[in-house]
Image (tube, rainbow, N blue to C red):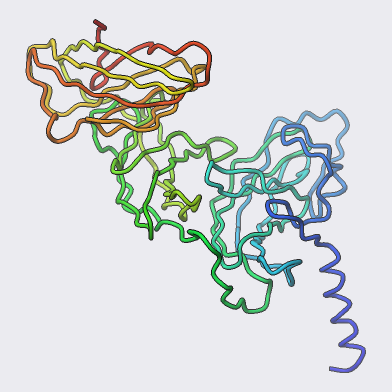
Length: 384
């Protein structure tokens, strides 16, 4: 290659680098990001979107969201501003009836998916720990503020760019994430009304402390529950019977490390099998600060033994009750309430017999919340 060719090559690389601005951890890499960003009402001019087909139709109504971003793939930047590494992806542009205004990039953190940055291009990323795996998804925005469905999840390592990455000096503390949850299986147990599923346990160099469950919504991946080991079952009531919902499970440890999400599971919301066993629940709770310790006595007042059960305790949504731990049942967060599945030793509740269970939860402050209903295998229980 002659001197002219080398000069053009370096000029092309310089122009590409100039279009990127490596931000601090958790911020977008693109220099075109607006200084102030409102996801619902972005102030991004249509002309700033590279390659977007913007329809300049005066007075035209925009009622449709952009299409789901696709084609996600690793797309490392040619350099990193510091040796901590950089996680970056590219994607195919979305389409919209009036024009795509930009894209929001979300990354998985210990407390859920958080906004990592916004861009008007189809490449984005953020600084991170070198060689660490990061999970992301992308949502497109149009000029009217409509949001697209979320892209598929993608997991990529933080690298130093397009050159091979060397092994960094190990950092102090626990930086090893749990293994990816596997073996997701729908309808276990089958008698619970709503969605139920289970999975195989993850492993960790210290210990897995929790499993977060995320459901794909119209515009995001929302955390809908947290399951504490050794339980490996999740239940969510209040869904549309006969409709399928997509979930992923993420394991995490005490060091704030999160696993790669499980493969997606399409789970069917079911009516639940009738138990034919009326019941009575006696509820007693003690509170201290935002902590609530509940004890429940569940009595079979029906005419047949209950062989296998799920107890749901529903609270007002405004109470913000969140499960911490439990005993004598495998407890999970279930929407605004909690759900407990029997242990093997208390699986059968004979006619006139009872079993005692309990759990610890936090709530949003103010007056201690009271449950609005109890149900055993989907049948509403009396209180007493």
